[in-house]
Length: 219
Image (cartoon, rainbow, N blue to C red; front, side, top):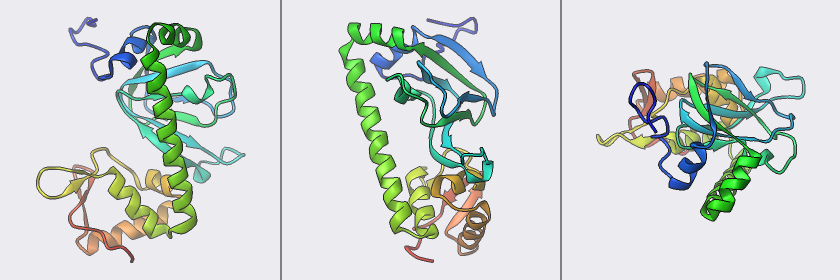
């Protein structure tokens, strides 16, 4: 299926089962900073990301932005919102990090597609299990690692080999976002990154972090 510009709007969804589901949804476009899901709301929709990035987070009971915890950031070919398809309240909020496009699928459509393609159920279950494992690892890190250790672990998880022997964080990641992901203040992240930059361990190119050499285990 091509859009008027001649491109495939579902081209970023490489899994056949997920693509077939996305093609049955309603394609919606969102500006940067749009709240797509509100924590605590009752929802019956699943979002498949076609373009852009969505951040999954939770905030303090008073909605304070400085008390946010980021659980993950999802890009094209991934889905969010599946945790509430049991009819329960949304367990986290979701906001667009940049202009994004999603295919929005209702619970009824999802049930129909699973009846047609049982592999889709296995795909969604495996993704829920993987995210549960990541949540467990994150909780373990919060309990056993200091702030520097958590920052190192997060940077190493984000960075990919750029073919030159260095590792680059492919997406623009702000100090505030890193802070919410590892559970500390933005000022602490800024101070640690400044020290790592001064020591020749971390650099910035095109507003993206680059790991120039192996990060020390302690600081």
